[in-house]
Image (tube, rainbow, N blue to C red; front, side):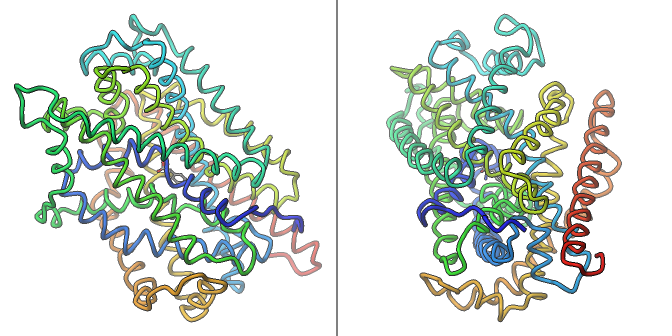
Length: 521
Ligand code: PFF
């Protein structure tokens, strides 16, 4: 175990780092896409219920387990789970998901993040300025992605160039470490991105009714689309699953990232208020800022029907197709487009570095590697693994990665972690641990929620999923036959990655046992 573990420099620093991880493409792109795909106001009730009964409890659970595990010199889930349940030899293997999941999301997240860098320059230089309709803007995006060859792009070269820069930039931040890299970038990045978002929201609110011939298409109705609740949607299990999935994704929880960040806390650093603050910052960025940008803008210019059509074509299309179209209609359109994509790029990088950190920390802690070596290994391995997402984007590879890394394993991991915390570690110890050094007292009913409601909610989601989706997913139903080899290849690759990580865990435990002179695990 490495005794020189890294630490955060300040309380504000760790809160901004966790907020930086949470606030990302999920807030400004995925959230509006999900809202529109799930019928506007229908989405928001399950969303807030999931926030209160899943998101917030998981935030507290993860900050607490992370700090607790850090006390034993562990920065990742295998070691932490082992510390929570020392007698069990297998629980550490469940912890593997807490390294695997973030890597899987990283593999596509970083590529999408790199588009934002490209698009911010395109906005500034007016490269997409000639695209005046959704179709032509979509064509621009497809050309950039290398899916079609058109007048804008003749191949993947440009996208690859921006990917390389983004990838190296991430590596550089990680190389500088927790305090000198992650904390420093988030301390500047998070306030800056919030400022940019507020500026854009103000501009969007002044859009009013852009087309007097269509008086219904205006900003106020766009907000109404989102905020008028539709109670009948509560009967629809698909909306519940989507809302719970969005809560996990946006808060970066249920995946191991917050565990790692919290492991760099000191024993009596507050977790209760810090967790709440980071979650609140994320929700402000999502339901106040994120929701006030894309949806009102798209609604004012396109109306609800056309907006829904665009969102159905892909969850990110509103951000990459509609927003540039809307913004370039304004005075100083190039500048506003640039600000939109820069905002997203900053939000992206403060999240992608958090996705990398568990794997880096695992190599550092469990194999005693220096940070530089660990970052080097991580960069080489993920560079290779990112290639399929880049070259076979149109073949369903990213969707497959997102399904396993960004949805399925998240729910599994959250379920295991919650039961471990509330039932195995025990709610009395859990509650005491959560309040050690705490700056607030969490209302008592959260004890009940964490013990009963959160695990029951999670088991329901898993159950729903098993009943509704398990077989079709396993049988690759609905996959375009031409894409089958790519999707299957991705799935096997993921299985291999999971197995390799499990073996690494095994190896590191055996080494430790040998060192400690105790019998092998
Ligand atoms: N929360 C990030 C977003 O909203 O974009 C994405 C993310 C980061 C998910 C880190 C999971 C994670 F561990």
